[in-house]
Image 1 (cartoon, rainbow, N blue to C red):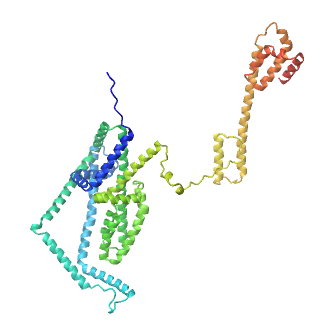
Image 2 (image 1 turned 180 degrees about the vertical axis):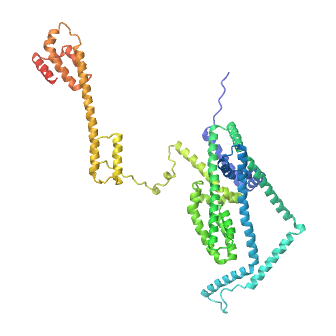
Image 3 (image 1 turned 120 degrees about the vertical axis):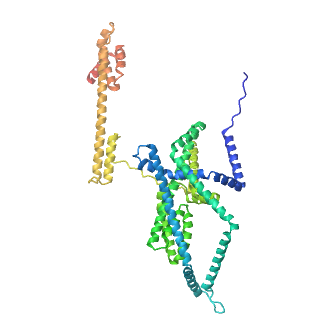
Length: 559
């Protein structure tokens, strides 16, 4: 068959540029058609609203469900019975919390409105009196008009009361017009929206129940789909993404709920101590709005301060001071301890996330904006660290600051060698020496002079010297053993018959002297070479007759 032409492979660089331009085009399309895209997303969310709310409810109720199933009801052996009781207790707790909040807010709100309407004239008179007192203080520092009238006119209680009465009449008239039979369309729309919200909420509760009751099966189905269509590397990245999102969203929401509850309790205690009116209503509103980061406390403080101002103007200053102290405690002590590093974003990122997501998705965007930004930032950080690690670069952000702004790390002081040491010590001896040094540093020993440490070092050096002496003795013994082996080997070697006399007269002394000198200088391995030279007549032939006897004498004396 003819060789088929290979298809050209697309390089990774080209693929990255294609993805970049696709993302850029999508971003431009998103910006230019933001209104239409938001409308499409809003319609999709309206259709999926029960499912999304059910997922959120199941996610928030899962900690309660696991607590009841794995700890409270752990002694119930039947799995179905234990799960059913755990689900029942979970939703009873959630409904109790919601009902308790409604029972705290609604009766107090109704009572405050009734009290405000009943005592409106006295409240108005008190406010006008306070404002007129402030006007008198200002007129004392300002010059009057030419006709002698004050610079700022006082407020007339009768005139203001007449204007307020006229406003109430117009408001009541507008309400009566809206309640006519021909204008019931507005009320019908309100009723329809309320019914739709309640219906979606009921469906969401049942969806969350179903998800919690069969969460293991749902997880297995999702993993089966992932293993079938995704590779192992993509599955690992997706698992890491879900882990980061769970840590960001779950940690933020659970920590923020606990933090807001503590803030509400502190506000309630302050209201009781300083006798601020509507303590339960004020604490509940401040605690609920504190869930929203940064701007949440202001959203709760403004309406409650207005209510307190209309009821008791003097107490509003005490209330604002209490809120200021509580927010400082919350921002510097409670929030860092409770939230910890669940978000991992700076205050600027928190503010930007609230502004952007609040503009896009309203109140829901303010709630999910911070954990969403935290998830994105964490993923980008991990990706950057992986890229830097591939290039062999450090991943610490401080390593990329300007050289002029880098903080030099304090240099560690080099340790001076201990006095009295000699040679290298064994690991056990070094451990003993360091232990003694630490004991001396922390004044465990009574003798604080250097004498004890020097004695210890000298003792360690003596131990080392003794070990060295033992090694030298062992080497000498090995040398002596080698000499004896060489002598035995030479004695057992055969001698040629024609040179027997010559070897007996001249070679004996030379052999002994040469062997002894060579063995004493070079040790093992040289004995055989010296013996071979003596056997071949090198010692007798290479020296004169007069030199043979001194060599033999020196060798015998040396031996």
